[in-house]
Image (cartoon, rainbow, N blue to C red; front, side, top):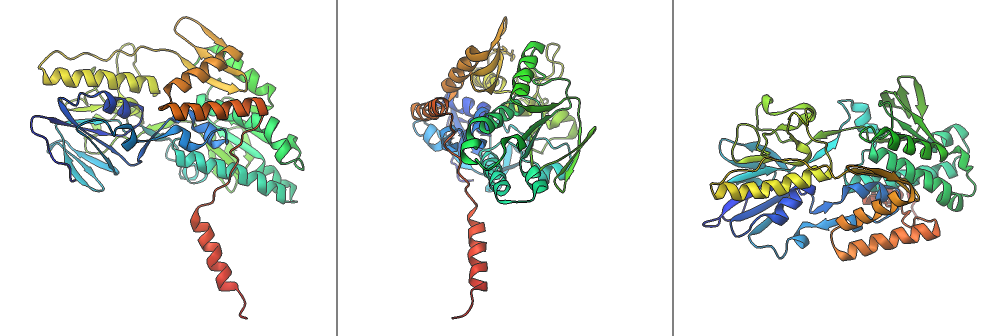
Length: 437
């Protein structure tokens, strides 16, 4: 990889530009370090709002931020778009699909992906929601299903097309269900007046005893009652066994559906290169109290890929943005401490609370000492998310989309964009079947 070393500067290689990697790269001291950021995408994505992209509420560009634009004024910074393949700790090298790169310090912030629990049918037939590509795919699939339902006279086929099942009752699943319920209530009746809206079924399936399992019981109950009031079918204590031929097999029955959205779990994108004892549950890398991969002084893991076990957090920290951001800040400090031969600072997570929106004018917010919901929770949810969006322009665009949707009861980005290969195939078939003149 063609990145020249710099005299008197240690090289910090960061793998992954999510919340953890981005925060670290933004705050690292370029008077001391040369920074190299590696990511398979050329942009950072604000994942908490992906469900709104999937349901046509906002455009994907509003929550996507090109790395080269973010860091164009940062000195001694390099970005390479590539896929990291493995780590060679013995040689202090990271191996990628465009070559290898030496490091003085390596920070693994590779995040996580959808966990299908090793089930091939889930992976092949269900839709995850972790990337901008997946969000756009869901939007295409969702709108295609409605269009196909409009066109078919087969009521059984229409029933499958109009049944939307969300596997997983966490924040993402609840938010996606709420957004779909709002579309059924306000948007689809105007776009598809010939379809009986009562035939559109929205179902949440979760193996947990309640929705939002990481929230307090009162917040879970509030979310459940709100969604049930919006005619969302909630199936608790229900395991998904298989999904094929548009039949979702459950532990207590089955559902015929052409639309299954999978938000049931995540698995860390930890890179290979370490022996098995370096990996914990969900493929997360075991780290010490300073976020160093256990056994190494110059390799760190932060964010969703890190598993720090302690008395306070016996199962590790929650895989949420605030943990990733705080670990990045702590690692920035410790890197400087190492260079100054000073004492390192252990990571101590400060839980600032949790929040989830469940529909129009309604969200649940839990802070350290109190909780609230309803319209006030929704306003707080809006403000917090706007604050964390990068760039004034993007904040304005998202705010405008939200205001338009709020006052017009309409999400304006209901656009189906087919991959170009489909058009090429069609054009090829048309040419091959065109009769001779």
